[in-house]
Length: 89
Length: 149
Length: 165
Image (tube, rainbow over all chains, first blue to last red; front, side, top):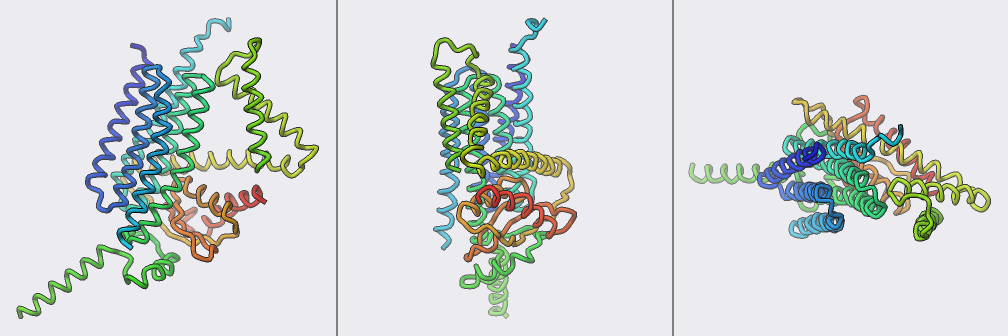
């Protein structure tokens, strides 16, 4: 196991801590838009984890997953925002 | 002598540097999400921190693989995130303003007051949802107390 | 704008066809492809001197603008990172109304997006008559709103107007 792989695993652990912190905000967030923002960051963190996993396994096919996820995260937050606007008007 | 440089090691070191920088930005953004006092500050701190962090991580990967196809896909992902992140932030922020999510008490709202009054005049008076609910509750409590007395 | 897109696509096509030939001397890696693409694009740009003078002048401005924007992005991100790590806030959140000189859809969209991408500022809404943009900011320059407005107007809006004109 080279230093390179150890560094990647450390990075992955740090991203997992990010996921945990984001999940805490998702749980306690006082308002609905707070949760939508937390969801946004959640998706970004998952994309980061996928990218580091790609580098760790040398399998380039996972990049497509990251690409699709980056588009779907945007769709998710936009539809949440419109939903919030709709239910309060 | 040039043959003795280990290019794989150089690539790995540069890639590691980029990835660690990106991950640190992501971690700082997550801590900011927990620490900051108000929704708008949180959002403005986070959306960009995560975009920059993700961009750095992806660049690190492109440097490591060193293939044109991977580079193209990475540039596509960076383009998508950096176009969609501000749009999402704008839409969520606008929704939050129209839903009367409260600002931090130290926020200077001087030039925004006119907009808030205009936007909420037909439905509400205060831009702070919770303050209004609290006032209503207190009023009900007062009414109840008045009834009993 | 259209010419820029056309040149980028043409340069990509040239690079792609070059690597299809089996006798290509250059190794097929990301670095060499990027350099080759830049060289071909530079040739197209120099060629435009003879038929589209305004485009020839705009491309360096675009490059300067991208560099300026990246610098701004990094500096502001570091500022926010410092504020998150240290225990006390130095925040002075303010919502201010930015009077817009930009009028078309493209310019307003670009300006709002770039303001949204710089850390510390979000565009909250555009007024109905499209004359003001409401911006939420975390830090003021030298403790003054007018300084920040001037910075955004000179830094972003003027350059966008120059580029899209």
